[in-house]
Image (cartoon, rainbow, N blue to C red; front, side):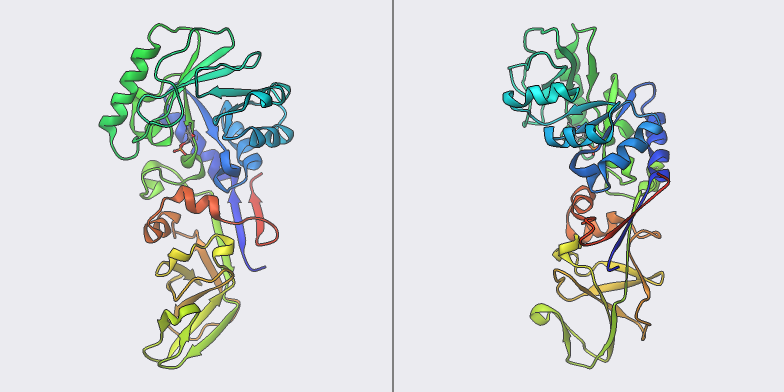
Length: 338
Ligand SMILES: *Cc1c(COP(=O)(O)O)cnc(C)c1O
């Protein structure tokens, strides 16, 4: 197989336990939107619940309906907006909805979203009380970068909700759950960290987290370039001297983005540089010697962090993880510890 994505649910359970510790007595809700940040929503959701998460969060009604079909029992919230004509389907699937604007859907549990500084979804004042409002929430814009602004958002949230006593208050994402104790309230909503990726773009081990996803392939072909020979579209890499090159059958069609030229992968455990233009179905790796075709290539894992690739691509692990294609048409997906 050209590409092999491995999901370690044992690691996910350990991450959830570590986050529950970090969250003090607050509930931990596992965010599994965008197919569990590319890791598989149903597998990851089930494992998170096993490890003590008490609800699952998705972004869209369709994600909620699909996840409900796989997991009949748990509490599930749809974080994004749901149109009025979809409320019946949400109710039938026992989903809880988030109301990001003034009108509160009826006969379905609703979480009112306050905009305390994100400047996106949410209202700036609490709407008049409705019996089906079970939660009030806000979302932090800078919990990973600017704790002073995050604290101001928490303060605003505290003022706006001071008079409430019988609803669930929830604010924190992964970064706040780890670094901002005053944002804990009744529940924390953790996404990125349950997958063992750092919300701060640093080594997840610093926060006691272990990567859940690893991604493997192999050298499909090994060839020697003479001085002046090039590899790939646009001849972006031209060999200055005789150079051994390994061709790995993974490209941007698999989620290995085009701006990852220059990053490293592991060939039989040793770091090797990706050179030339990333194609849809292939990348080229500069070798130090002739290697056997079939040599193991680790794209993520075995100590090589997705955070390192994110730095090269000038993006965040969230975006890289969501892009890794685990469709059976592109990759073999293996789930450990399920
Ligand atoms: C995605 C999302 C989260 C999770 O954020 P992480 O940084 O991945 O922990 C929490 N709350 C809301 C409203 C979200 O949309």
